[in-house]
Length: 241
Image (cartoon, rainbow, N blue to C red; front, side, top):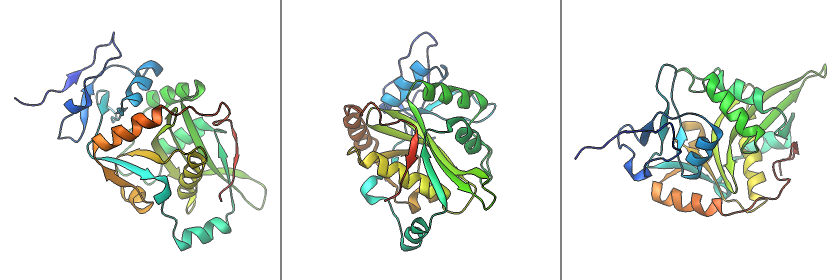
């Protein structure tokens, strides 16, 4: 019997079992539904995320293998460590979520268009306002005291589980600084991995690896049981090392 691609019921938040995801393309599980906060939270709680391009239907994914970063294995080579020690950047948490998502959508290094459609930006902004989506910002201030956002990332957090969505940079190492800051922040409360969803050369260079969906789900479900401090995601300035 061939694999079946499921159509979500607009009146239900239920997803099919992740084992039903198609092998090719890797991890496509279902079509349809909406980007309501309730559906997004239900999806991420099961290791499912939306990903689609302009003119495509809304698609939901649970890939196997899954890309993750074990925070203890986050790769900081000598050159990057020197850059951190001489850093001209200020790093903040949750101080400009909207601008981060906009810049991720328009990142100049994208060659295949963007999957961050306006409705996606709006959906994640709502999640941010409800306390489920967060951003790391990297700022640069020039000699004239002009401050600009030059790097950052955002993702979805449910208890101790953080699923990275996208990142951008406008200056050298800025997105790396954002990822390192996120890793240190999560490690401070004994969270040991970041969900990267799909592997790419940048993430691999930073220490990301692929693991089986079964192992990922085991780690993810354990992370979901962790209760976070009330002020953990409070907007503030972050310090590297």
